[in-house]
Image (cartoon, rainbow, N blue to C red; front, side):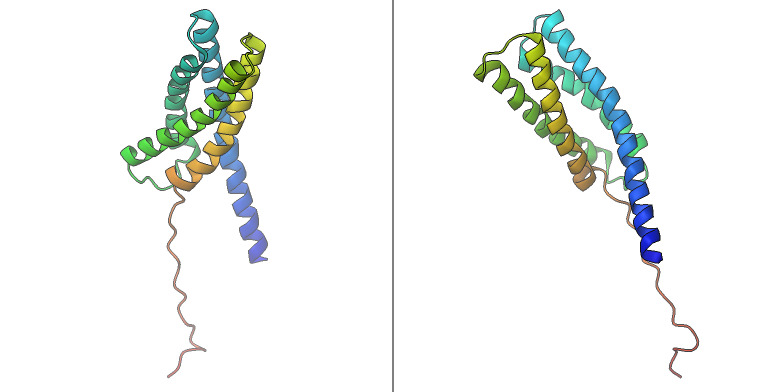
Length: 159
């Protein structure tokens, strides 16, 4: 029974984290996707430059949302450390997205908005999967729990 309770609590905790991460991610996605398209097609910036600038804006929002809402119950290992790791891992997620965008734009030669947005979407999904896993692993660490010491009861104590 204890095993089932523990499994349920673990699953419920993961589901809550995933829902919060998804909410922050959805808002960051709108910021990223909207900003990328505005910079790319509204201001005529390059496909990769647009993505980099939009990602910096969205990642800043995502860090604050994830630190102070999604993973607020987790250890705080120092703002500077978390911030550095968060943006390093976001850089890797950005690289994943840029590889997809670069492939579609420069290798396939597709420069239309539909192709660009399809590449942006695929790259964002792949980068998000990496970021969720890596944030839990290296940035927002699990809270350390004190292991309760079991005291021997009166019947097992040797006199």
